[in-house]
Image (cartoon, rainbow, N blue to C red; front, side, top):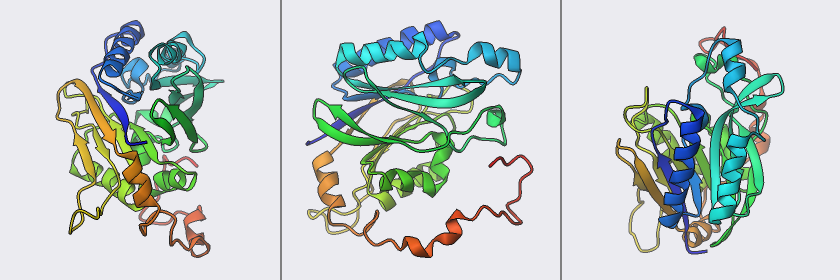
Length: 292
């Protein structure tokens, strides 16, 4: 598997879910014409990352995992023979979640992931956090690849990408909706480096509130035999403008690198990390709005 192409759909949402559905499907077609194996949307695409704080409006805005909106992207995945990662404000029973459904090129849903680390200090306090991270074997035209996902604020917790790596992820998809400045890009660079995984992040462009574009991709390969010193693992950083940006991951190189380098799960000592599973929180990290 020489490469895997992930289309980062750094696009502006419209004023309605109907408009976002039409634009989303059109962009999937454009991504496929550009050679994409996977098309990935920014965070909560169906509503353009809008979270009503009124329960009645929230209930009327959120959509189910099996809704017509989400299912349409399964249909387009099958039509185009291309995997699609569609994001949405999900109605989940009586609760609401920030979710991503990944469809394979046959239109089969391989998983639905709900954001584990919700931003409880902001509008996401009305959402229910997800309970787990998922990795799936994704059948692409280039071959099988193990794909996982995390969403935006999940990036700021090393545990998110670490668990995905331990579950076998080779590529991590990251829908986003926030300013991608140097520190957040550095977090993604670190997650790719320490886990030897490819990371594809897509953000909304400039013009969307609190967003600035700069979708990015890191291949996780810090050292190459042909280069005498370490290299930047960044393989793509978009500017602020709206567009479809293609991240081309060299899968054969990533797999060869993972088979012999020192990071990931090669030399860990899990029996010494018991403190990481402790739930006690002490000053200065106590926050009144924290939810377990």
